[in-house]
Length: 157
Image (tube, rainbow, N blue to C red):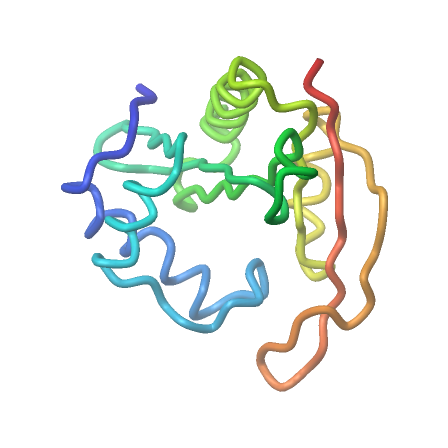
């Protein structure tokens, strides 16, 4: 089941997201999310969805790609799944829901920023119709090394 995230989901969201932050290069951010961070994010975003199947197993959210009115129709998303939810259709379902929401809200396109060290993430987005549009060399720094950021794009209309 997919539903809107609620402030009460913050602890489960932190438990889901923080191992990806702490232990992998999927995200360049090294600062773990607190429950307060996540409650604030849920409140600030127009769309923050969770996937529930025997507990919270994933989430997807989006926001404007860059600030300013000129970017008002260009969005960037985040999608995170529990390892046990991968390969079960949860990611596809979350992305479809986020993309539908964004399109209904007037978004023209969705951007994925994927770590160059995340080939599974690149394959996932390619399977959903995203196309690689740029590689920003050494954009991120984590675990004592620089990493590339791969930008992928999908038009929603």
